[in-house]
Amino acid sequence: MSNTNAQEGQVILNQDRAIAELLDLKKEMNKDSNEYYKIQIYSGDRTGAQEAQKEFHLAFENWKSRLEYESPNFKIWVGNYRIKIEADRALRQIKQKFPGSFIFKPKKKS
Image 1 (cartoon, rainbow, N blue to C red):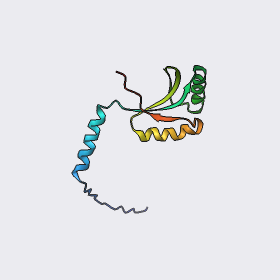
Image 2: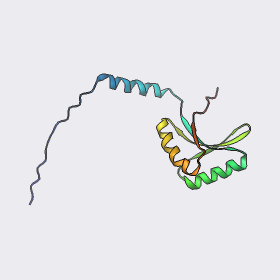
Image 3: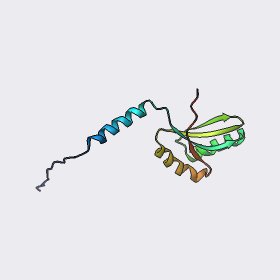
Image 4: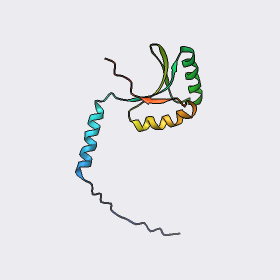
């Protein structure tokens, strides 16, 4: 038989009230925001876009991509990131396979 001794303690967090207020304000601002980030991996002709999309799915099988047409080019877009840092993390991985990829915010459709 063995005895175990555990310590008990209490943690007191002293935090400025403004921090909680700012976090609440940020949540409220983001609630109504339709802004998001995407990553473009290709822009060019239809055949090239389809090949890039196929190659993307072989390399990143769990990520979705989308073929878009913006005259005169077909584009492959990846992701729907609410926070830029999420897009940055994904871009780092994607650039290993698609070095010309970049992050952008789609134009709002009116």
